[in-house]
Every structure is written in C-alpha cells, then in structure tokens.
Image 1 (cartoon, one colour):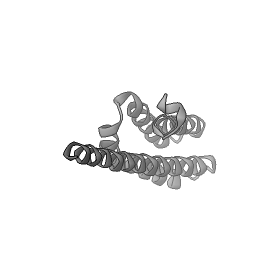
Image 2 (image 1 turned 180 degrees about the vertical axis):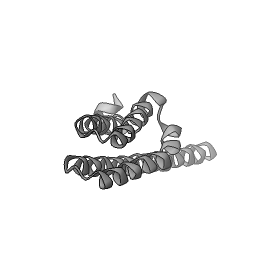
Image 3 (image 1 turned 45 degrees about the horizontal axis):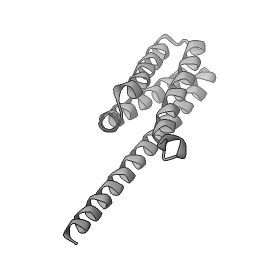
Length: 126
C-alpha cells in the first residue's frame, strides 16, 4: 500500500510539472508570435518608430522567456529563434523592410516549430 501511494504521488507530481511545462510553452508561443506579427505589420506599413518599438518588445519577451524555455527545450530548438530575433533587430536598425519581413516569417516558423514539437498530440507521443 505504501508503494502504491508513493507511486501515485510521483505520478501526480509528474502530471503537475508537465502541465506547468505546457502552459509555459503555450504562453511563450502566444506572446512571441503576437509580437512577431505586430512587428511585421509595423514594418509593412513603413512605420519605423513602431517597428523599432515592436522589435524591442519582441527581444525583451524572448530574453524573459529564454531561460525558462532552455530548462525544458534543447538549444537545437531555441537557437534558431534567438538568431532570428538578433537578425530582426539588426534589420530594423538598417530599416530594410523586405529582408525584415522575410526574417519575421522565418521567426514565426521557428516559433511555431517549438510549439508543434512540444504540444500534447498523438504525433508527438509516438
């Protein structure tokens, strides 16, 4: 009986930590995707002041979320996002809208890839 209670306790702790992990991934995905979309809208409208502000918010959001995500994910998943954000910031400083829109599209794909690879689905279980 004692072993069954210990096993049940461990299972409950694992379920709670997995739920916490999924919530953190979902929140990071949502925030980063929203900020990337906002930056793309600002860049498409040639509003460089707003684009700079949006890119700065995107970079700040990534810096806030990065340490927590690295606890759960490998560098192979987080490094492309970090590299894309650095490129976005550089392209905003250069005011290069065409390359910026391409880089923001790539950033969105990298962010989406993190969520799709970690989301709870039959595909990810097997």
